[in-house]
Image 1: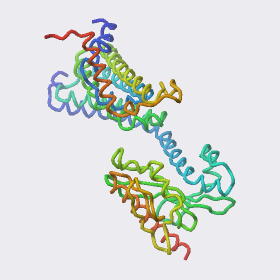
Image 2: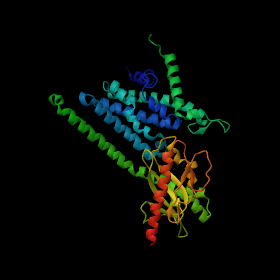
Image 3: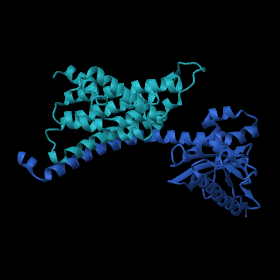
Image 4: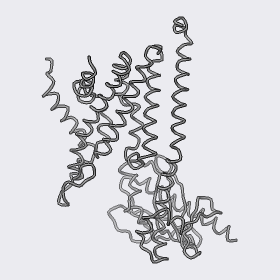
Length: 198
Length: 217
């Protein structure tokens, strides 16, 4: 596979959320506002790409017995970097995202890509795979957040789109709407673009 | 070299090395951001202090409370001093070198964990001026509603100490109107949390009142 194909595969064809159904909990939790989703997505992309790169670079020297331990350690380190950076430079967003930034450590996408891709491929390929998977995840987050913020607050990225006459759909602000929207999204994409093997 | 890689100590040494490197990088990164994070926290805390005291300061100076809360650090510097001699962190709002209100950082136990709050009181420590909980672990959507304006504003103007005794507040259901002035509308589904708030207030204010009596003697 060339670099472009790796990226497209990671971001779309084998998208972590709609194809692999990974990272669902955070895509439900932080999608009530577009800004939060964007920051969360970028945080995941950053830690995913760099942890993939590091794990891949160290793969020849890694003893099999402590492979997972090392992956968790590396992922945790990058996630803490993101968390501390947000706390220091974007305190408001950091507060809104609450514990979810720290919980990127347990996001299945990171461990999944580390095991499935980075542990067997070259560092640069792994980096591209990480960026692709991260952006694919961000895309899903943004799609859900756009619908939720538009109907729930009548705004996009905090800019009011609808006037004062707009009746806010409080269901869109609450957690259940994320379940419905994510399920509908996965359904549409799967029935349109993936042929089920009967 | 390959013999060493096969040996059983290699994974241990490898893991230790990796840990040292990554923890080291993190430590350096954290130290370099620590001051910024602390500044944000201080600012957030000061904003709350000013918000709670802005009513009293505005009354004494004739300024608009909105202007006071807009420039937190200036208001903090001009009007608020820290106060010693109390068992809890204490601040006083000073206008023309006279204290007009006190503010205390109080702590209590909630249903799931501890909570921390700021309470502004008059200089005799008898009337609550304003009250806000800034740290709690109560049930989201139920107990955590103690931070909402509708609940916390009920305490403004309430008498906390009467005849040197702490007043016992009682709860009434959320839908009902309070009949006597020492009643507080509780949060439905969070009786224990509501009671914890009342207990925290009466316990802590009684303690602080004793501190005040002692320092005056």
